[in-house]
Amino acid sequence: MEYPFDSVQSEFLVPTNWCEILLPNMNVRACTYAKVNDTWLLNDYKVNEFAEPLKDAYQMKFEYHVNELQSGYFHILLNASEGPFHTKDHRVELEAIPLDQGRTFIHLRYSFRYSALIYLALKLFGGDKTGFTVVGTDSEGNPVYVKGLKGEVERTVVCYYLANLAYMDTLEVPPEHRFEKRISRWYDLASRYKKQLIEMGKEEYFTSKRQDRTASLALQGELNR
Image (cartoon, rainbow, N blue to C red; front, side, top):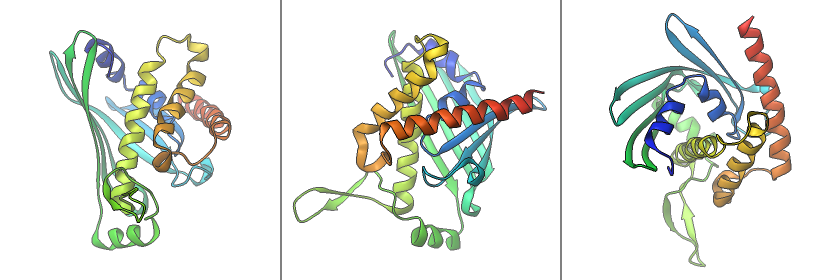
């Protein structure tokens, strides 16, 4: 990231910022946060397809933890014990170290557990997502990308990474315009990988994300009462 380590650390170590980070992702319909018994909880409303409404979203209940914090290093873990399709132990991990005064190296991981039966079901019914690993070439010499479960995981990792970038890239924007700039930035970044990430036109994406923002604020308002 083309940002100083101190700036990256100060933003990512604030648990409530993570809903702002996650919301531009296509398949996130809403996000709320709450502190329960000294643990921050993030409720990430996720859908499998962009067109699915909030009422059909699966609520990923992440616990936010700072696993390690040292001078020049931090490690954040978002962990959800249950996931869609009976998957388990969803983990989003972010580590960071400074490179120089103006740049930070981050390491982002996403993983989850599943049974053999669930793996078979995901292969049979959820195997249309295109990933980033090249597994061959077609008859015209164009790259053929991995699909299926690995494709879905790779796609998710890149979506999270671009959300991190879009968040940092828009911090200098006045707060009242920040969300609009953030979703625009996320879409522009994702458009570099149209085959993997783009499922809709920009205006359709904007309309949906504005609705998602409104839903998030309403849900958060109910929690804050």
